[in-house]
Image 1: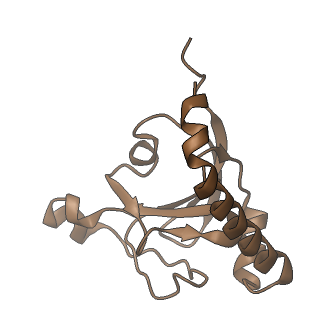
Image 2: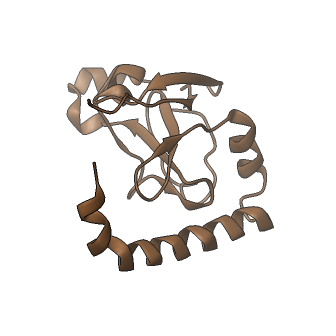
Length: 148
């Protein structure tokens, strides 16, 4: 049987500066369904390591010029490393670990991170993630056969 589609809580950063938490099924195209347009990761890869999260924004290059024109600029102040990135329309923050497994993320966690991205717990999370990543890279060869 195919694996059930995971449902997780994601955050939508609305263009007007408000937030909502939304429970979504992580199925193909879910991001586009949520914001109404084709999407891309923000900036280089959208990854916020401290939260195991990724920021997704609307892919303006994939829109008709007048569509892109009519979308408002998203007014959320993003934390580093994305403080200089700008996007139009709504953005999504979702969490998935290095192996791509999605899990819940809350507005509370996001706000806490935005207030102090350099808090010790976040720096520790980044270190832990990088260590796991190195381990994963060493394990890759063995794991591929086990996948279901």
